[in-house]
Image 1 (tube, rainbow, N blue to C red):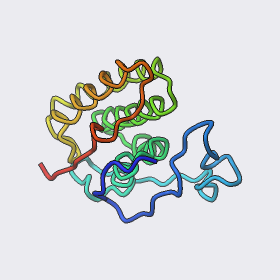
Image 2 (image 1 turned 135 degrees about the horizontal axis):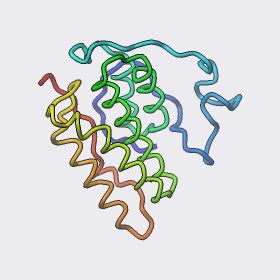
Image 3 (image 1 turned 90 degrees about the vertical axis):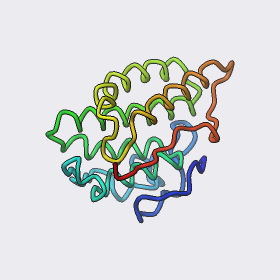
Length: 174
């Protein structure tokens, strides 16, 4: 696990490990998985975008993302994405999910998958980024930082994460 930011947005405890396929127990499918007790359950947490600060799944997903739990962040955000009826909000969450997936694939040493996921997250987040801030995320700063990060990482012979240059989610009230 990479501790990427100390800032927390929720008070839910972090899982005991960040799931990386092939390295540790699947959180829900494996009997020893950290979320085995939650397998098959899905909480509905969708709120209007203006009430993002009250959306527990979104905030916990941001915590997970900032601390290198990319599979778990994807799962947290997916519950909101599935419940949202707002097309812009759905694009936003689909984009966040694909960014988290790209980070996970980078961690797994799969640069071609990262490149494919970059196209997907840009497809979803570029229209939302025109809003500058969305659900507390200053997209006009964060999305270019994500792009730079992946571009720099993929230029490496053996791409790997670099926590000091990682694009954290810094939510604000704008």
